[in-house]
Image 1 (cartoon, one colour):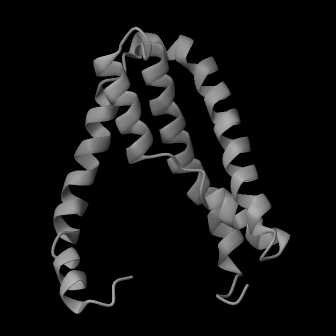
Image 2 (spheres, helix red, strand yellow):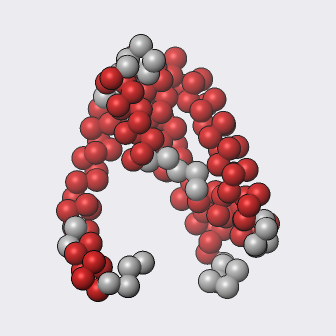
Length: 136
């Protein structure tokens, strides 16, 4: 959003590097999941997913209703659901620095929530956005 052409061109130069490195970040996070922990991590992931979904929807939809309609507010709220890099970095750092608080199950649950929200939300959003115009 910068009006400085130099800043925009400098940021553009990192686009290919970002596209190349990003998959390795997600792969490394996924590889740290202990398969044996998935059974106990799933109920934790469901609680985190439910709490995060309700919190993000309420925190986004309610304020958006002040300036737009319910349909647009819901689409905005839904688009805010995916948890990706930041959530994984927090889980990873917590797991590395304080494994007594962020154990294997909680770390695995965080990765599951990230996976579910990053895969499911675009699938849900696609049909909602297909008929919209920029004025809605």
